[in-house]
Length: 251
Image (cartoon, rainbow, N blue to C red; front, side):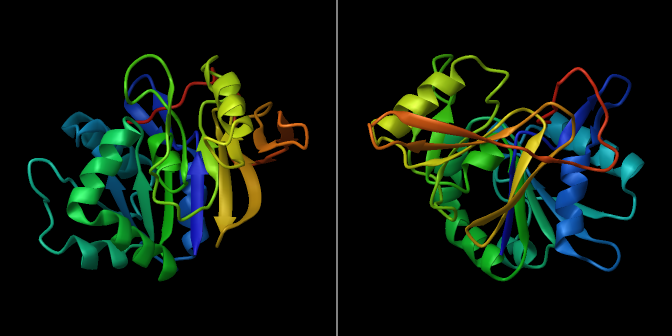
């Protein structure tokens, strides 16, 4: 039972659009597949944007041709007849960024929440970036409803915490998240700077990992005085991590 909840995954590549980054590679390694790992991508949070899938396939074909890549699209109808069986047969399910509110609504319509729990309990590594990080938690902060960040509180709850991505790159995330934890709208939880992922085994944090130096994870909880308390968690820098402009690609 493993989840890699991140503000990372694909990295931008000016020539090809995206490349498979160290954090996404780490998710594949966590699965422990001996050969030809199976990875299924979901871009529900982008409305199954076909260009996003095309960039993902191009990145994997170039960087990880050993991976047996597939995708589950739900618009305008599921592209896989028995998507429960398909997801349960994967080594990794990776969920892209976008609108977590829309993702959760569409998943609910198709019963994906229970299927994801079943996949998680059966040993499939669940992971994702931004909306693909928030969805596994109770809730967090989102721009799904417009430019002004708002709370979302109807996550799948596989992890009984709150979560927020992009903690260092979107100025509104940190103060809103701390306020929502302090006033009880959200339970205590975890935040990630861009480039950082949180590896959970069951519901226990194993470690934070990063694809760049200088980025952190953060534990945020309500203190005895009712104010939010923030504690930095130093991530382990992954192999092949390199300094870059800080951008991520949510493809």
